Length: 275
Image (spheres, rainbow, N blue to C red):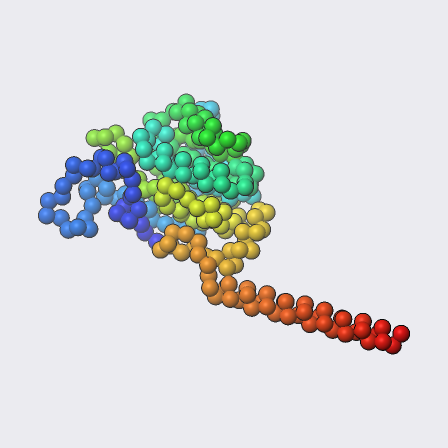
């Protein structure tokens, strides 16, 4: 399990504005403001989340989390809140922009589930946020779902994901990490991607990894043989060993093909000489 503290990943304009006046007294440079204690992510790669959690969709209907899984498609999941003044908008815009850059459609090759962590938010707020993002997205996305909390299940799901956040009553906002998560069709946590902007390369590879050989993302799966996720770089990088192996196999195949052509040409020449 890999743990991310707030100081490592809590890169947010919201926090900068909220705590601009905070001055620690005789604290070590590595110390965090007390309001950020417990904010961060504990990665639980391979954990299967509970599929029986219920939420309200953008129409106000009670839905089950499993309705968006077990369709043979990986799921991009993000935990935000719709009334967030800055940070969540940056996350959702970054997510939307990278979705525009990959040639897949939510609801066809993958699903997207956006869930509000604020139990006060309503279906109307979810619809408004969806309308805004869909207008910017510019094409149909039937597989992008906007949900609101029900029976404190957003908090339960967040804890299962290792996504720790805190509510600050002074500014009436939530402190949390900027991240999106990729899960398998069965709800197994496959990857955490951090930041406000995301590389199409990383999102495509993460979805391909999470698909567990159940989707048609064949090109990405072939490329994954030579790439792997580097947690320190927070991106997929070339895996030299596999790349060299792949290069060696390709060289053998090319040599075999070349020898086959030479032997075949030699036999044809001999036959023509005997004729």
